[in-house]
Length: 376
Image (cartoon, rainbow, N blue to C red; front, side):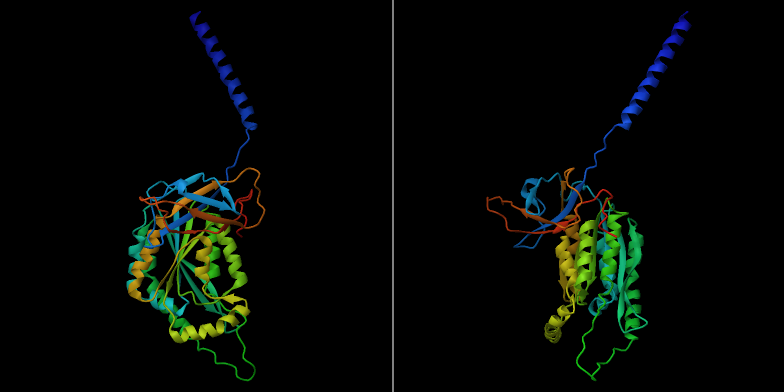
């Protein structure tokens, strides 16, 4: 009898559990899933007097404006705190520009890069890319290209090997470029200015890091540090498209600008700059992209200044504040650039307002229902 009662109880329990499971399944089909969309941006704050990063600010010291309207900061972190998005750093090396290639073929420069990368957290990923050019078979124009030497990885041995191989690759490419004699001017008619100029792979590199940030590394903070002389003109339409993709994918561009112009070259460029602009191109595009995406640009005049400059850029990555604001459900992807502005108001120990500079990206595109569809 006891066994019969026990069996009856077990049967009742089984039926009850089955009924609850079915109800839970039915209720699960009616669950409304809410997708939270957040616009993240990094901000580098510096003391205007010393030029050093400021690391002791709090959430209440910041204001974020979206098309001039204030946004509530829903995500905030600073150095030493857990970040919402891990760092993925792409080091892009320009082995097309004459002055930058002179730097990058030096072994001591490669070792300084290795030492700077070693300062990063072991959780950070690092990749190495070359920006170069290849001569068009049917003309005298060199077409920009880019090549990944080492993909994003936490294996510092692989990154070190890739960086130490750069001087050899730079010397090879310099010999390749010198094998083509410079075309002489055509004096038979009026002076002709070039109708197209290769920017040495900058557009290619911008496309690659943008696709990376919009796809495989959508949950990371993708930063690229470009090492270049930044003298090659960049087509303005191409630059605008690169800027759009970088902002849409949330990439931050920083730059180490290598080499300075002689007085003669400055005079020459001062003369030809209006013509370059009239042809729809402009120099200094890496510096421009850094300003638009919230990065930092540092110029060095001599190789001995290189180590301190790259160290400053690497240290600046850790010193950046990570900010974020949440988009409302009714805010749809309108396909346009929304202007961003970050303001900081903080006082020192004596109550005086601190004089600070802010570097943060200047715009964003609303993430659509299919993700960051602005990058193709």
